[in-house]
Image (cartoon, rainbow, N blue to C red; front, side, top):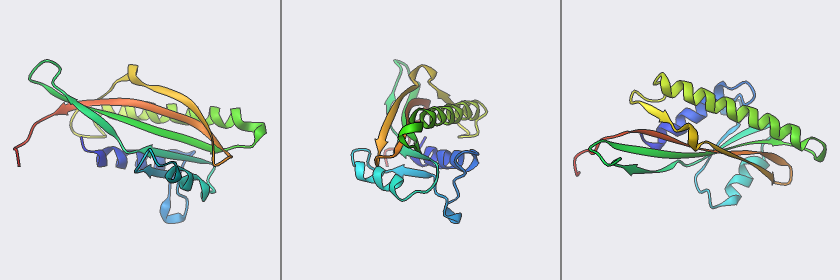
Length: 162
């Protein structure tokens, strides 16, 4: 699988989720791709100028190839995404809980879509034991939420050398 497939998929999830309603044409941008996860300024800029109550930040997917000790090669793609919401001191926990629920909902949808092959014609397996989450914030002094980490596994075929 190529990264663009996952990026497009997560942007589509942000468009369809009722709490996110990503619509950049209508100036309601709630999905951001973080091209450089080591540059915190990029993340700050994504949240600073955003009036939406919830945002989804996706790090560029990473991964590795494996032969699993056989002739079958697999591609393991690691995906990290943040769900953040604007909070005051009085409602940090409520915002975090909401972001957690949205994140779990996205993962549940991803699991269902991977089983039904809506992400790709090639089978993709969500490595459920790999799912991790942790609270984050404050980001830009007012945004709190959760970071979710997961891995997806798919078959990989070596193509010609050139």
